[in-house]
Image 1 (tube, rainbow, N blue to C red):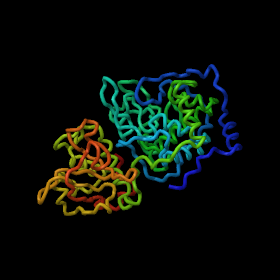
Image 2: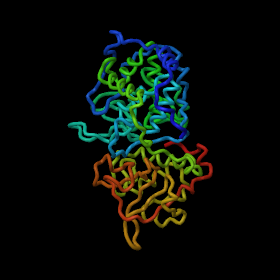
Image 3: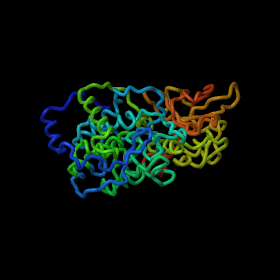
Image 4: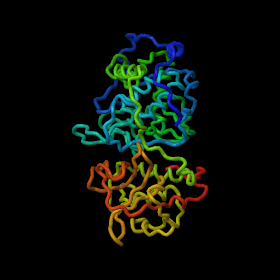
Length: 441
């Protein structure tokens, strides 16, 4: 990651240019309350079902079909955050995304960061929350999930749910302001930004996918949303009010603007990066194959643990990883038989590796003792703030939303039993698995 730009305000000339370019103006009576659609949910939602689109091509000067971020070609996933997060801090990766997006879309980065803070404290909210009589439901921060109004990711864009194809949920309808699929190849994003109040999702880090759960994509897309409405002649404050649906002068807009002023004054600290980022160097040999394994497993989160389960409605620990590697194209001779912890422990083609050699996709076998076989397996997905992260189908004895989950190894609701060994099968993928030949899951 390159050095972050200093937190002090831009030069007077730059501020003057931004003000002119953004056509900042005091709010008018016609702005107030326009499109107010706020729902009473725990996480604020981006509503897009009644957006009025003004035609124009100027926005393409900024959007293109990709976001053009500079953070590299590896996606970052969120989830499993269990610590307390200082609301006056910004994770270093979110800070860079906001600064890059602000420069690209010619918007003060502090407002982009203010949106990120107001929606999910820069991706640092719990994976699920209590929604009154509905019980605990996903907040939409974890890959493949949406909150009770159909919003997802660190910027809470409305999406079409990956499983049902529908928008919304029991507490409202955030519509599909992201546009298209929640995670899809960037080459398929051909609709104009703003089309029918949607298609605001862009590829913010150049990894070739437009993924609402990837912070780089989400932050750049939020900045693009603001720029789109500013290019229709609205103020920045109006665009922020439109993002939430509660209008200029509402509590949401006032809070975001106040946080932006705080950031502009340099009153914040930089926290460690938030999220688990695929290490491209680690997966260079396997290319997209290991990424496909991990994404398949992530897409099953929220489903139940089922002893002996091999999907699609539930999985046990080895069944989940067996199906993930099958879906990613591991050669048939290695997946012809159903994997168990026993077969993984004794697989002659597998490589045993040490903790200091572990790579994404490697499987950690635990449980059992002496000469007996292990009883559980989880899969390493990367490191988050220096913590080792895994995904696993853990047990039916934890809440359903935690049964198939990505989280810190041996922590929280997912304590691990005796460590046995780490095995790797990713080296068995064909040599061309990194060329894009493997079908996306």
